[in-house]
Length: 176
Image 1: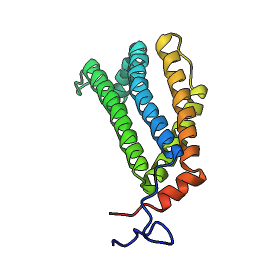
Image 2: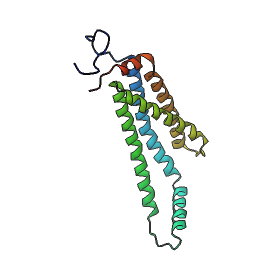
Image 3: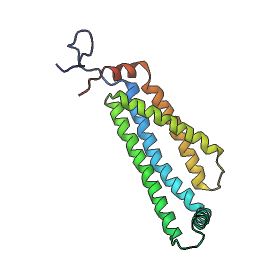
Image 4: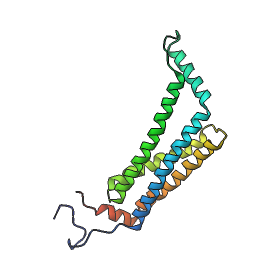
């Protein structure tokens, strides 16, 4: 018998079954990940909608750094490349959240810890988005709605993963 495989007093007890709270938390985290992909897409469209302001700011900062104009940077290319990297980063974060949710479902307590930290980040991001200057249009509105939904689902998943049955399940899983 492996060390840490004692699931109870009798040591002959079967592995504990996944509580409903863990299964539901997993599903909620999957929804957060999917919404994260859509939020990344919405963020790209929001940024594209304000392209002129961004390129003007990039040009101004480039001219401040090199007043002689010797630096030759294609601002449009830099903007598009930055936007693509930001979109891919958002998708990568969504994949990471899905991976952590799978680890939570498998009974890894460390995944719950990381997802709890992710919840704090998502909630703070959603709250801080209200302090930001509002743009008009469908994409900014969709982004705000997606961020709010992500925050609500993440808080729900975190609360479920910290309930008693879930905590017992995570505490009694053996480490391979």
